[in-house]
Image (cartoon, protein in one colour):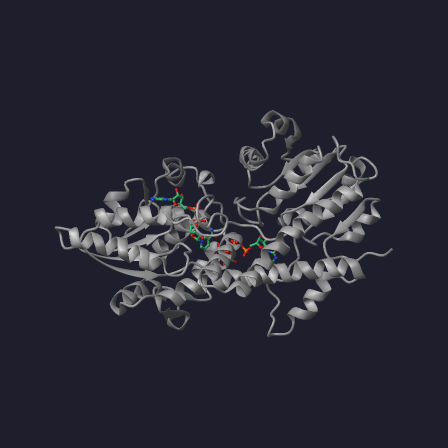
Length: 466
Ligand code: NAD
Ligand code: UGA
């Protein structure tokens, strides 16, 4: 019997795939958030809290058979042989380490709950991404409860970081590049390995010590984010010199030592993890008195923030330095295509900056609801203490892109949704106010086609000296 604490973007899809691949296991995914659990249990699968291609089909097969979603956390812990901790680990917002260190309060709460409810021998698996040596904290909490426990409970702690990317989570889980298990108790490692062996080839299952495993997860995300910042830095050089970043990325990526993946320029990386995991790495480096290493990784985030700012400044400059009451259409609010997740989406900062210029914003996203966009912007805006009613007057939403662009001055493509690639530019050109602008922050549109329709065009990483 398996319990997973945390029914979020990781817990939900990961446990769905394990349930699908291992019909002999009974899996309970538990969460403190009743609304989320209700959504996971909803009859109409379009209300699942997470949108992931392929997820609905799996849920249809396994939900209420060997996969259950519940808020009865204590009962699920009591019954479980293996417990995955899959709770959120955001950056601390106050106190020591604010702005860099991970806030471990949800992990600690989970460990304490396990300590008080578990029976018999329980394998506790860190699935959340955690600072190096967090397993020590979890062990400490669990082992001190053992000393006070009348019913002989005992624990092993393993690290089993998750490498899935949103939008391709099911594919990544079904066919992972690797599964990493860190720990020092070989029989528990074997038990966890047995589960994965139901569908993952043995050579893809790596074992390591706990600290290497925790550090590998932070390092993997830091390397990936670094590639995005690297190509974005080159996009700026291309714009200044007349190069084309797509062509440069193709030429560089064909060197098999570099590889062609993760070299797409964009408005800066978003998502809940890259920034927080690098900040966490930076914090660790400072703790261990490695300031040069800390500065090295910090630069990846500085470049990422700069990319968003330079895009915004470029928009303002192109529209004669004045956005007051101009209508600007934002295509895409999710942090990448094929997800409904908006955490750290570059669309947030760019929208806030445009609102500071008094622009009117019209949003379109195929999977993010109007309520979600509004909530995210309003809560991000709160820091700046701007009046909520002002924001309400400046935000508009559209289901139909062609309706959205009517009388608009500019269209900014932020998320790389497939449906944005082949729009009818002839029609759009007729609907927009002149002079009209398109800003393609993903370099996925055909600039020439758009210019041919009489629209001014800026594309990230496209040096254009016509
Ligand atoms: P999430 O916010 O979507 O989900 C976390 C869930 O945990 C929430 O529903 C929350 O209510 C629940 N929770 C918090 N404390 C709890 C408690 N004490 N008891 C029960 N439930 C509790 O977060 P996520 O995106 O799934 O990320 C979870 C972890 O996985 C993070 O550490 C993240 O860094 C890591 N990770 C995320 C991804 C990703 O693509 N999102 C990929 C790999 C790793
Ligand atoms: C990332 C990692 O890819 C996963 O391996 C990891 O498990 C996960 O973080 C995590 O720990 O949460 P995710 O953030 O879901 O996954 O999505 P990515 O595909 O990595 O994209 C991250 C951001 O970088 C997105 O905003 C994306 O648009 C951007 N990106 C990505 C680019 O701008 N260019 C690229 O070439 C690739």
